[in-house]
Image (cartoon, rainbow, N blue to C red; front, side, top):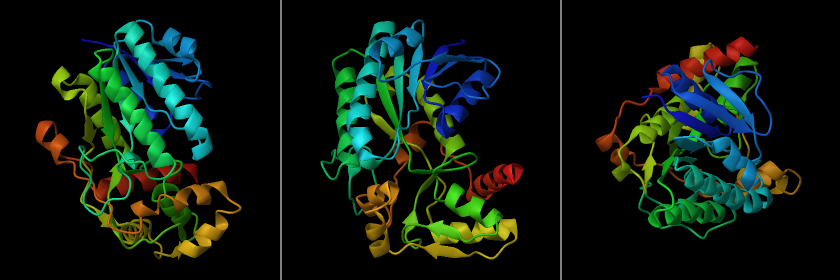
Length: 312
């Protein structure tokens, strides 16, 4: 049965999710402040500022589901104001329309860990951005527990794939290699690290959109291809491109000094726990309930390389 799904946010994850839903015949509304130059056939655009409760509710009228694919600038000062406000507005919109709420989430709320991440780890109060993600997690959890909204979170590790504009592997790795430049790596590339292929993330979001109600009120980790070091993935991509696997690694001290002048580098410093040790995500809960055939790195890297070649 065709559904009406409103997707808030149209970055890489929103685009891929919209394409999957429209491709199977769902009615899809993409909601954000500015229209996109391209929407898949079957999608419509609705101008809305998610920080305005009335606008979020207006564009959600008649929806069966709301999917939050939002991304705010990587600045904890913005996050502190925008994320709780946006989450509150979307939950109100879902409550007023009776729509399911599916949250495209990350893993920050676990904070520093020395073992593979599992969904029932306690929420952290570490740092600025992880603490904010803990706060918004409590918002959707409480909304579900109270019976106000049917809510679920789908959590993914660092993204990569075609059109992922802020990915170390895609943008600072593959795109630079194709341009004849060394990959630019802002942290150690030698710890095993889980990466999530964006089409797998979108597929997981749609899976939970369709799932029975007993899957709601909790978080699910997207399955990933077996973890690799970033260095090994850059080397593999370079071999597929046909260039030498050159890397420029930004030392930790230089990153901290650079953070005095560059906000992006400043914001990365508190997130070093993701890159100064193995960063592994246990996706077995999702795999046992739904599916466990994420894209291999061979196919994911090949698609990413092909995408960036079209932009050259």
